[in-house]
Image 1 (cartoon, helix red, strand yellow):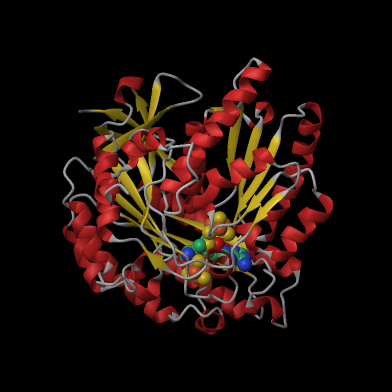
Image 2 (tube, protein in one colour):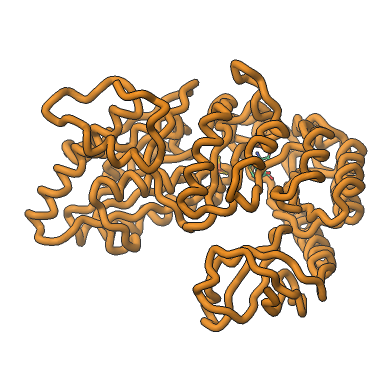
Length: 491
Ligand code: SAH
Ligand code: SF4
Ligand code: F3S
């Protein structure tokens, strides 16, 4: 067996080549998956010769940034198998990476499956795969088996690393292949992946969640919290940097509890310090931070860091201590406000953003006004506002006094206009200053404009060309237009 220390992203390809298809697939991961990638390559090559054209694939993400990072792994594996990536409409293999955090995420998947069915009728070679959080719900899988029998492959979040093996099963089967695990304690490293941007990348630092906020389905569909080994994280980032990446986004449902269950426990702040040392890496972002676990050590590390961006996403969910208690968030309104004060005192120019749920069971007008009060006091740069969605199996779903739709809608509208009004004011506060931006995109409407991201996560459009992509430039922020700036490159 190869020495584990020798493998990294870039040489997954060498190890795929080395897989010996004349032998049985190895039992050990990730070698087993390398074997199946090579096996799939053979099957796909034969099929493509038969059809006289390349086979195509499309990976569609429905969920959060962690879901998106998983999709990059799926896309990387499909690419190594020989699929050519195209739009969903033209693909021979479509994989939907689903989300189930709110009901409307599920409805979107069912709606689009109907559309895929019509495409499949036109292309008999088409295969449809479904994975991600929604597949961890037994009632979803039942419904798919019953009414969506044209789907070829269904798997969940815990065995996503087995994607190559599952694709081979689906390619060789005329039936729906289903493989869902209840949980796992395993983390498989070193699978190939594909990046959306050459210069920035998400990096998982942990998986799952142990918090069980009473409204949230994530702990049920993503399983228990597992932290990646810091050495594996640092090694991945070093290789990303060698490959042109200058910014990483560290991903976890609650990054502040990173490392608690490692053999040699380590705090998130300590991990950040290790990552800061990586030469060539320019920017570090992370999400999400649970307020209950945000330590003074982390604030200190952020304050002294040259690379950690001046942005903190700090989900509030509700401003009412009573509701927070029933939500099982484990902080009070006062503790949250005090935390914000400490962060602002240490890092005055930090941008704060948040998530807020409106209409949680039992939320009174007074509770709602407490939320409005926190929004007013904290002055967020922006906030994602959500209407409470009942998720089967969570404690909140069984709670009495669910709030009538019209009441929720009214509160939602009031909250939204408040966060927008404040966001507009907050966003403009750096007008006239020169800031470092990472140039991310050419403007789709005006090709003379490039779009860059500030440390505080806002965007600025300025005149430039594509040679600037992936570079860090100095840009003067001339004018704020709502939630973005127009600027001029000065260096
Ligand atoms: N781990 C992150 C959140 C992940 S889910 C955290 O704790 O901050 C992203 C957001 O979806 C949550 O912050 C919450 O605001 C929202 N959300 C989760 N479950 C929801 C539900 N049942 N209804 C409405 N919004 C929900
Ligand atoms: Fe859901 Fe709470 Fe875990 Fe976030 S911390 S994923 S809201 S249970
Ligand atoms: Fe959705 Fe799963 Fe993320 S439920 S929000 S894709 S962890």
